Amino acid sequence: MALVLPAVAQRNQLRNFSGGQMGNIGSSFKSGGTGKDSSSFKKRTGLEDSITINFRYLDSSRYQTFDSSVLDFTKRLPVPANYIHLGNLGNATKSLLFNPILKPGWDAGFHAYDLYFFKPEDSRFYNTTRPYSELGYLIGSNAEQLVHALHTQNINRNWNMSAQFRLINSNGFFKNQNTVHNNYNINSFYQSPNRRYKMFVVLINNKISSAENGGLVDVNDIDRLPTYKTRTAIPVHLGATNPGGVNPFQSAVNTGTQYRNKSFLVRQQYDIGQKDSIVKDTVVIRLFYPRLRIEHTFQSNSYSYSFDDSQVSEFTDTGFYRKNYNFLSTPSKYLVNDTWNELSNDLSLWQFPDSKNVNQFIKVGATLQQLRGNFDGASANYTNTWLHAEYRNRTRNRKWDMQLNGQLYLTGLNGGDYNAYASLKRLLSQKIGYLEAGFQNVNRTPSFIFNPLSSFNFSNSSGFNKENTVRIFGSLEQPRFNLKL
Image (cartoon, rainbow, N blue to C red; front, side):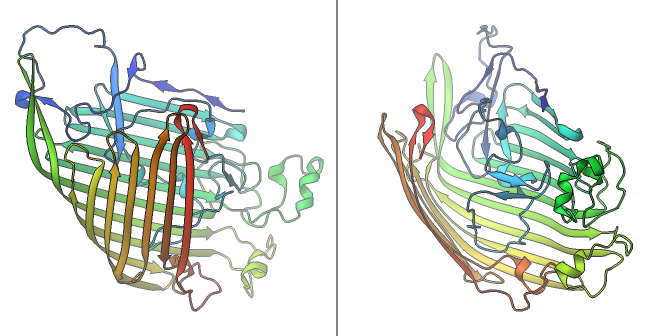
């Protein structure tokens, strides 16, 4: 049973568009940069109280509109329908589909809670004519809560800021199963009046806390509820014997997993191209078409992954650590922790063969990444360098969509890693739809959790060789009926 109470500001006559004041490159703006008509009288259009809003992602130039469909409610939750979790919202998740890591380079190796993280690449950069806010509150069984808040507004016609917050709080149905997640994302997008310069700024903070109980001591206890009265009374392997009553505002996780992540990203772009203009009814609409783009991206990230058990007791010991981790005796406290700090700088050049089609481009670049890891009693420093290239051509008539991209790690911890990707999409007909075919090959160093230095590597002392994954895929898509095979 769930109750959802959405609150949307300026919901009346909510309208969408593609382009707009900070729309795709080549969109118009009026002479003088003020956007004001020379007439002293303004003609009312009937839309003065409406809102026009759209958004784009960090690595996409295409503006999108909101999906207001409620046909699939799982899209409103962090955990999609093809995932399962350990019992309640906020616990560790796992995909029901085969989902290998298809990304070369450094990876810490902790992915059980990826769905609950805000990420820079998922940040939405909005453009809106009115301040826009969303507030969502979901309450479920046993005081499960999901709170979501979003606010975005344009400071002026060329500058937008937005803030997003999410809270997940769930007590679970069994002992020591509660979760507490806090996430926020603050981002900003600025574009100069002449459309040549752009800046993207992203600030993200993620706090993930999930209690671990190690499972039931006796799985048959699940059928003895009259004996235990409630599921929270059934003995479990880990955590306090009496964790306390159900408190929806309690945030303590004494035995379990705690992940922390902070991300700061700044991306700057400068375009070189040609100016143009259109005259309509004594109003000059100035245009700009890019031919060359220079891009620099700076990113700073910190990560902390830990498992902490401060409730171990000789009197309630179930032998969990001795059975599963070959401990000779039960510890009074148990803590393992990996922390990472990452700095990266990327310099890229874009070239647009067709200046009036920003979805056709050639991009080449190089990245320098510096890593520092701290583990239980050890530390390490690494430096990675790699090259990357991409060709994209989505034709203006939307009949063809070609994408080629690759990465090659030259030096460092992940030297020799690479990714090669190719896909081709074609509109066969309005009745049949789109046909896509593609290929991908990824060669990557195993995640660092399998490295002997990691605090979470309990048994492997020598590490593993590189992983190589080949993926061949194809699809048939019919947008008219919203079908995809």
